[in-house]
Image (cartoon, rainbow, N blue to C red):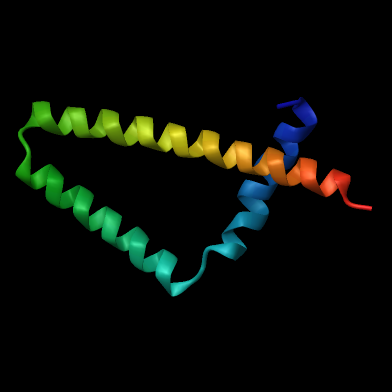
Length: 82
């Protein structure tokens, strides 16, 4: 991603994206994932919890890459519009 696209992406992520996420479904899923994470923490021994944390970090990194790719695709599509 170019520097300009990175700046635009960060702006969109910080300033625009939150207005698309206030739905009750988003808040419900957010609370659910937090509860499930706490439940897993309570159930698992430390070694297993470390594995779960590593998985969560890798999944978050993958999701971030997918969001960036979606932004690039949308930006490319927008540039093609008349």
